[in-house]
Amino acid sequence: MSENVALNFVDRLVYEDKENRNIDKVVTRFPPEPNGYLHIGSAYAINISYGIAKKYGGQFNLRFDDTNPMKEDMEYVHAIIEDMAWLGCDYGKEPFFGSDYSKQIFDYATFLIRQGKAYVCDLTMEEMRTYRGTLTESGKNSPYRDRSPEENLKLFEDMRLGLVDEGVRVLRAKIDMESPNLILRDPVIYRVLKEKHYRTGSEWCIYPMYDFAHPIQDYIEGVTHSLCSNEFINHRPLYDWVLDALDLKGVLPRQIEFGRLNLTGVVTSKRYLKQLVDSGILDGWDDPRLPTIKGLRRRGVTKEAIFDFVNEIGVPKTSTTVDYKMLEHFVRQDLKEKVMCLMMVQSPLKVVITNLEETEYVDVDNHFSNPEFGSRKLPFTKELYIEREDFCEQPSKKFKRLSPGEEVRLRSAYFIKCNEVIKDDQGEVVELRCTYDPATKSGSGFNERKPKGTIHWLSASDVTKCTVRLYEDLFLEEPSDDQLVESINMNSKKVYEDALVERSILKFIDQGEKRFQFIRNGYYVVDKELTTKELLVMNQIVSLKSNF
Image (cartoon, rainbow, N blue to C red; front, side):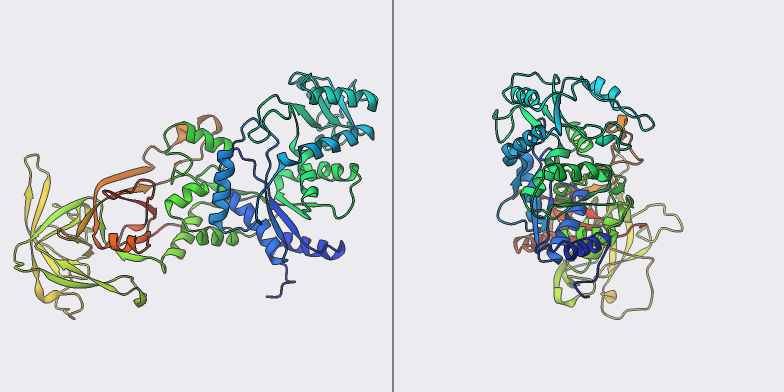
């Protein structure tokens, strides 16, 4: 496809803008506030801005929007940088920080004051809301709106020096209290915050509002296209007003909005995610049930699947709600040709082959369809394990697995027939005694009879113990704002501590493999946080099938 073919409406607007304004280099950015962790929605936004910059041979910036010291922390900075590296998004040698521009932004604010375009206001927040008016009623001017530039400069300097308490005074842009856009009715552009900043310490006690700082930061960095979700569409006139009022030279950034991505069954709001993490019910920001990049990585989701997912969504103009199961679909599509196929039983049930005298060996393919993965030999021994749910003492007609007096095929091995059921004192089935038919070895061409079904198995002499963790939806229904923690599905994580898996997995892990398909169970990944030399822990990435 030609470079000039627009892939979406954002691409088309950037292309036309580049030609009309003679822009030499397209520069985009991703500006997260370091007050939380990146999530799947972040990846969606990153993909749009990063993709545009790369298509036009431009520059992509990572900028931390850290001009609000209330909840920002270096922990989040490090986490975001790590996630960006994992996603493979190159943003140059170093990220940018909005807090590095504090003096420049302050100077721009004093420029507006001198030009009579900003004033210090003493109204309380409640009074400002009253003065602002409504969608159907115009606002009215603040009684402090006509202060002289000299008085405003003095009052603003008092704010900077810490002589004013929080909430007593703010700096407002002087725009239009009758504007139909409420955001343009003299918005606050600076406020007093006597909080220690995680990078600048106590150097500043006044901080710019996002709507004022953001266009200035974009301009300082040479950003040509500020791409953001459409929740900021009503803020664009203020973005443009700031750039125009400051009488800036050169190429000015242009804000373009795209549709916000919403996902069913999960929450991506940082506030909600933090609430879930703080509840103590989850295992932290990297809990595999969360849609954070950290959680998805620990779950075993690949970056390729994430980008396939967000690219499939495209760049709509309006907000889009997507079934989270769609992401799982792309995970399966990505993994099915990449990972080895092994056998694992979650709840082992012992099987004794009473007529087997010596160990037999069977050949098992390492992948269902790709011969390049090779094969391995598995011992077929007197003691085996099958999945407990693959046996039923009193089966229904639809049951297609092992039951008393019936025959079943063991995958890649032989037919076995259950002859005796051993129970403990509580009546629990603890052992099955079976016979095998040596003429039915897989690949032998035997076709005289056909068993009800095929099940997987393990040799008791060739297993390693494994803890497996299965995950279901964190919420069974859409959670409400006031019942977020109460809405958590308490069965969203199931742990099987006595699972068994082929011993060969240890060799493959040593060779660098970390994701596997466990036959009939799903795709799994080694949990690097919990796995030790003594214990292997595997997280289910996705099941083998879905309704998507």
